[in-house]
Length: 43
Image 1 (cartoon, rainbow, N blue to C red):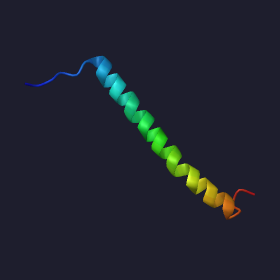
Image 2 (spheres, rainbow, N blue to C red):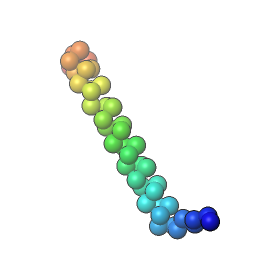
Image 3 (cartoon, rainbow, N blue to C red):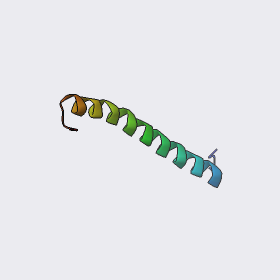
Image 4 (cartoon, one colour):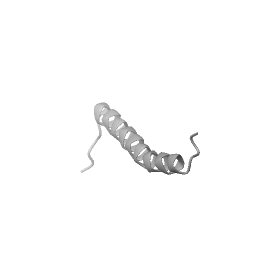
């Protein structure tokens, strides 16, 4: 039996995927920014 996804479920899925992508991007960017700052690039 195939389960049909409603429009609301698709929108919520897309929104959650976008949020997870943003969160991963932030978590990757923070240590990179700290390392660059430690190396003195942001002066």
